[in-house]
Length: 158
Image 1 (cartoon, one colour):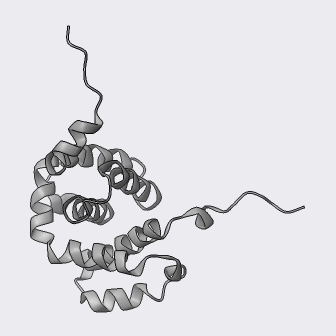
Image 2 (cartoon, rainbow, N blue to C red; image 1 turned 45 degrees about the vertical axis):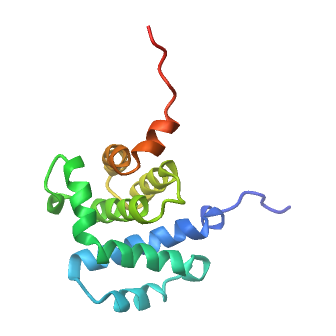
Image 3 (cartoon, rainbow, N blue to C red; image 1 turned 135 degrees about the horizontal axis):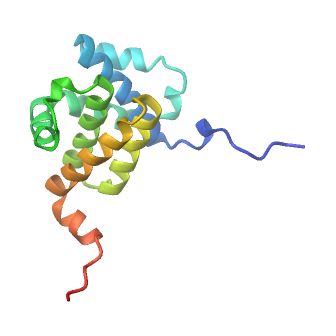
């Protein structure tokens, strides 16, 4: 009898994998500042890389690094501490999500938040996903205000 339950790796989308690899690459960059091309070449050798969307991976990795000042400037007002006091994982997740908010308007803000929370659950600390969720809720309201407002149900007057 065949097992009909699929492994979690089997159900990951190419974009989810791209985000995971971008997270790993950005983590490397935050810790040691190697050249982006070296990071990308290293990541391309990782198991499962062939199942990601390599163009989206590079868009996230390159976008977060090239616009680091702007991205961190957007994130900072949503934090309860200086950005350099975040764990490198949480910082990288927030940078990737901010990059998507800013440079990938085709991706709905809820998808970006959900994907970031999932990354934090897998790679971050025990409650890091809650922190990431709270910060990204604030950031989405700032960077994607009209989209966020249109998605919220209207409150009844009275």
